Image (tube, rainbow, N blue to C red; front, side, top):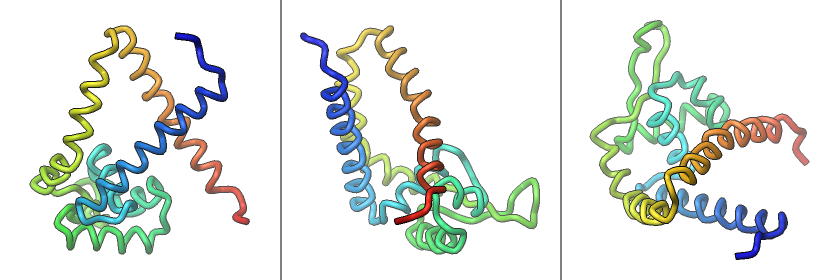
Length: 153
């Protein structure tokens, strides 16, 4: 197989990101959530309980919008507010473990298909692939912060 040009690789990568984004939107819809709620639920599931302010920063919404988002996640049964164990004046939002089974049902087809795709790679290739994921995530977060600090048009 001939090596692709950078333009071809960029197009492949963009198609990949598009597919991941589309899957996230479909997952949110299947779970009865808005994509921003789906994203917030993903963040608190991966990061653990967060204060509303920390979640707001992480997902890029205002504190008011984040409060309303948490209200919706609570009403849907996906998240709950609890007192911060280190500072009782603060409240943290955490996923409801029993509800995460519903999310697993939604994403299990993708997990199965991606697991199938990954069987084509050697352990060494998987190491490189997951090293990329580990390095790319902070790079995307930094680029996102940079975009958000620019003046809007």
